Length: 256
Ligand code: IPE
Ligand code: IPE
Ligand code: MG
Image (tube, rainbow, N blue to C red; front, side, top):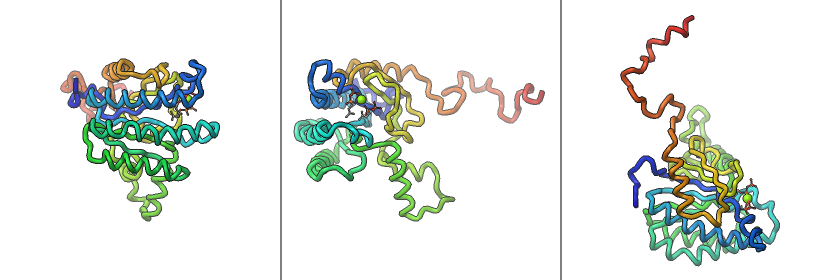
């Protein structure tokens, strides 16, 4: 069922795909085996999101801090990136998925970057769902690179505001995430989309990422649909607007 026009379906879902290593360890397999199963979970999730009318999906695939992992895991993740593009590009293109890779490209090999360029070009005209893969990404890095570009433009501090800074962040084409999901049981952001998630609804699941499926997604979407998003207001939609105290008449207890 496609519910793109329903406000209860988030326009933008962001996911910290965590738990691959523990999933592999439970099977007495190397961590990269878990990452490989994680790619299959990602492809399932892209399809499930598109079917439900989610327009933008951003996933955390490799953080600025993940370079601290053992060398064989890092090189395994780089190789997996290229294999995943080769394996899934044709299907994603056919299914209307527009793929963008966001993050710091310095330190990434020419081969990996070439595979990203290939899938971005092959899917550039798709419009069903945007898939942003955050690779070598960190929320703090994103804010610093935006500031550097603003300074290079010679920004006048008096004209700088939130909207102008946001236009320089790597996710500037997408609305802010409505729903932020983290699998794997940890209750933290780990430097993902710090600026953009200011008002995202948070959903944490103990499910290890390779086990994530449409049922898990639906649980997160159901939890989201029950939330009241206020954005600093008293209530999202006043039950009886006429009964509200006019702002020009402060309540009498304030002057006591
Ligand atoms: C997340 O899974 C994927 C990446 C960080 C690349 P982990 O590899 O962090 O899995 P756990 O948290 O160790 O189980
Ligand atoms: C966050 O998971 C990064 C990705 C999922 C790519 P981590 O496993 O790296 O996060 P920490 O280290 O537990 O905070
Ligand atoms: Mg982890």
